[in-house]
Length: 80
Image (cartoon, rainbow, N blue to C red):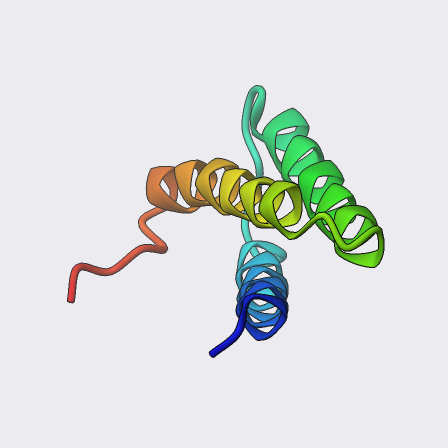
């Protein structure tokens, strides 16, 4: 899998995880955290278009981390 495919795969996974949290009630600062994650997702797309793949990958990785923190708080991450 090349770099662009990997970033696109991560964008798809991010979208899937965003759909998952649509059904929960965000508490406290979680709404801001989700907003930050979405901003990093947008940055991912921007840097991908600029062909700055390292920054793009860093952005989507950070976006996943933020979103996973919220998912973890709501027991949406299941240990495999």
